[in-house]
Length: 145
Image 1 (cartoon, rainbow, N blue to C red):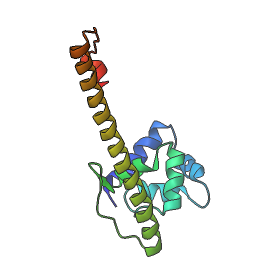
Image 2: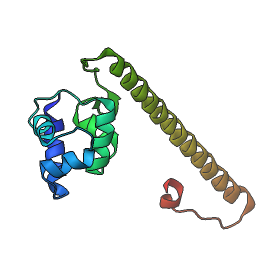
Image 3: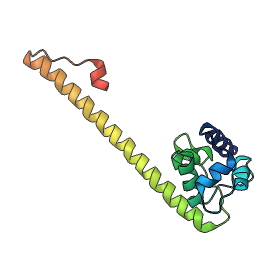
Image 4: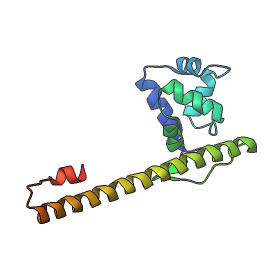
């Protein structure tokens, strides 16, 4: 387990004004104060996917924040996947993380397309101004805004 996950959970729990018992109650089910303690101290591997989702909800953060704290993301890319005790859950997590990566890649493509269109519009306005004699102005902030 990445040591920052436990620190992140402890810091976020305290920020919300919760003790370990209250966080365990928010997670629900059979999750106990002892489970929270072991997780915060780094004695527990990454929780099962279902527990991770419940923890994120209890801490009022996106699941992605917990995955980042756990070291599964590194500078916008997926880090090496840790081995989980039950191989089936790793497959589920790999699928979920793969889907997230695909969405992030598509967002980057859309941002690039939008910038390209903005650049083309800027050129068209400049050309229109030069050829028509119209007084068309666009600030640099509007161009990049």
